[in-house]
Image (cartoon, rainbow, N blue to C red; front, side, top):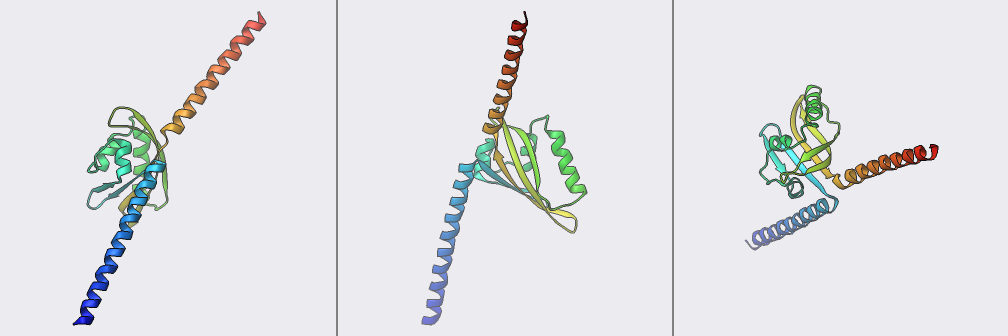
Length: 168
């Protein structure tokens, strides 16, 4: 009896330690996602269940129970056709290759985000099982790139105007 009790307690203590380690790992992953502005989406094709990380919810301004269909509707209208084409091609020609897609998303608060995603769909017997996606907020990078482009255009215009003035 004493041996069984010792085994029971040692197993319980081991399970608590394992759960504590898992909780620490999940907290560290969440913090890391926040630091690098990366969110995660998982979608199960059979159950139609969507799991969003807290960071992705914060990034997009949505609740954790938001569905993948609701997120797709938030993709900028100009980027919708490219997204649909990629998804159609993946379903038609099943591949477990990674899929990269850059797109704009209409944030729930009304502003536009520039996002970069990397996804992988897992298949079994040619049927999609689940999708896992990492989404990075590239808004600051894209905004800086757009600003540099505009500055270059402005400088080119100024150079042309100066050249025209010098020719007179």
